[in-house]
Length: 187
Image (tube, rainbow, N blue to C red; front, side, top):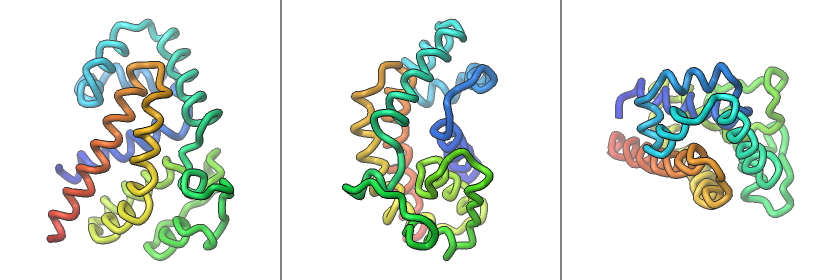
């Protein structure tokens, strides 16, 4: 997988899980049929054939149900039975960011947890741009793949739209393939 493709997919996923889908984001998705087909044929057909207002409504109901009300894509929530979000360098993800020169300004985002999926995906995007493969692999193994792959495997059953069902499969396949790719590059 080429570096630009990896950057694009991490950016796409980071944005997707950061907030609900609005009209402009849906328009961007519709302008990218290759991406929709990569995510899944059902996604492509559903996004193309569903009126925008209906699609936005259903996608946002799905998003809220899956990632806000019933489960939150936050590493510490998934791995810690107490579901506490550790702050500062008490949070192992934040410590990893700090050790690798990634500055997360939590004041510039609506996301309140440094180990939220969107921020972790953004970190991966930054590491790819720096071409630092060893930290990428270490982060995937210790953090992102460790918790998010089982999380999305479980979340698929909650999805009511073809888009989020396919996204769950796409996410798992992409993260595993990317981890294998980095490992092979470092071998």
